[in-house]
Amino acid sequence: DAGVIQSPRHEVTEMGQEVTLRCKPISGHNSLFWYRQTMMRGLELLIYFNNNVPIDDSGMPEDRFSAKMPNASFSTLKIQPSEPRDSAVYFCASSLGGTSTDTQYFGPGTRLTVL
Amino acid sequence: GDSVTQMEGPVTLSEEAFLTINCTYTATGYPSLFWYVQYPGEGLQLLLKATKADDKGSNKGFEATYRKETTSFHLEKGSVQVSDSAVYFCALSGGSQGNLIFGKGTKLSVKP
Image 1 (cartoon, rainbow over the protein chains, first blue to last red):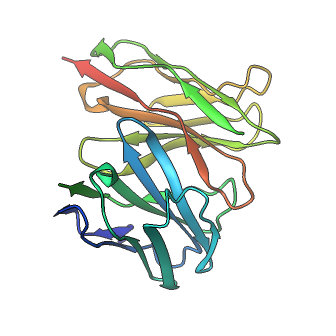
Image 2 (cartoon, one colour):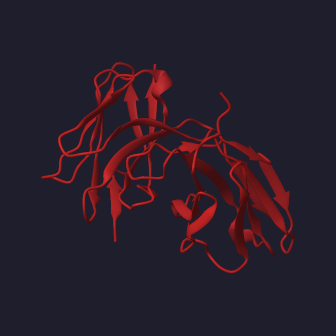
Image 3 (spheres, chains in turn orange, yellow):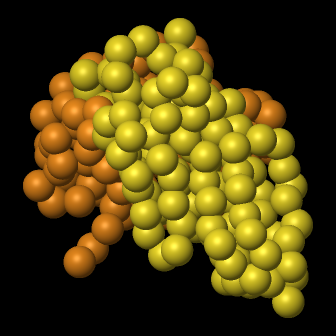
């Protein structure tokens, strides 16, 4: 079974450039989550979707970050313009129902480096 | 707001030693509790979970019991192996939509 798929696995870009991270959740899962992992702040929830609708984006750091889920099998996280402090590993996760008892399945992550 | 506190690492043990990683939480209502493991260069994998008080989650020799009275969910394993070397995250999920709140993570290194 295919798990959560993320692309690219590694991204190196220069400050000011636009970055787009992609995620394909597990088929049949109704909830999708974007997390960011840094040494300083650990794992932080950025935004999550339920049935393709953004439910809570209060974790999105600022207006430079945006996320979309145009259909049940695809989501993007965009940073424009990127800054060095955005360097982190970005994880996408999906769950079947999105309730508090559901297990979240994580993708392998995208390691972003902004120079 | 809800939060998770887990013991600082790193933790270094010899093979076959006993492992405890402490985790306590603060939450309103009745959260579900999780332990996730992250191997180097990989995403997080669910290790075990418990969804109500006094539940015990177990997997691959690891155990944790949901203790409401002490708001704890400590991870234990009786005999660790080198292959258990990883970062372990305690997390809670209390919202209606299931978003996770993670602890800082504890890095475990097991030496042969």
